[in-house]
Image 1 (spheres, rainbow, N blue to C red):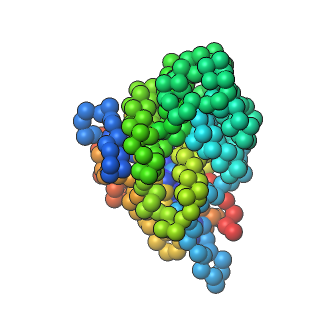
Image 2: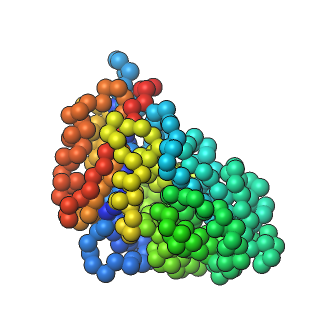
Image 3: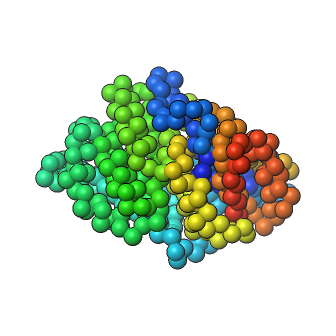
Length: 375
């Protein structure tokens, strides 16, 4: 299940396993060692974003094993939208890795672009479109973790970036904050996108504590800049993943989890636009919720069995990635996916979930359901 705070989209998947992601437009608090800045001056949260909730039936006579919190979404046959043109721009090493993850997951209906100052890193990208920025400044050797060089590289390649963004409807900026290219170039790309009138959504990660103070400070500064250049910003604090993954998780897998959360943040929104649902939701609906909505948070819930609907919603809203109460969010967007046994009553129970009903300021709630075959 995916959720979004304020004016963002969410999806709930219900299997006998139900999954969901949640994001909420609210001032984000960073992991315990630092405070993630927010441009909001009041405590009113702008929106709540819930990725897909999944409720799928278990085979007769068998008990379905609950799936990992960050496992992939169940999708119906996708018909690419003929109207909304969606682009995902992965910037820097973290952004490029996230794009590779999205491509590997089979995410469809979007165009993928990898942007980097490191020519060697671009060779490892699976994106159809690769853009090297700052060729004269960095000579393809990267930024050495310096955000100022990343920003200058993007400024040098403004024309190439603008060409990449041209004729978009929705632009996702995916990046890992704390490094050089992602931190420095992402705000520049986002500014060009929003200035051109495209709906611009940032989906970024905040570094693990063990990555050091320098990266933490650079990440905070980059997030503050980026927040001013996007319609909606989803910040995923990597330290919160430590509450989800097993203690024995290898380091490389921990970073892979972080990449996959970025993927779910993008997919939770794009699927609502590109995948036909039983309840019609189009790009205009998503745009109305996400335009100038501020900061969002992401949550996911998966459940199975008799009470899968309520359990999926509960998991999504209580996700470790949710650091503040969603009660003051001004809107929620969620997507429910499940097997053919998904019932009207289950959908209704999700919409009547207690936390959703307490949202203030006329919450906007969108619902779409993809109905995949149960495995």
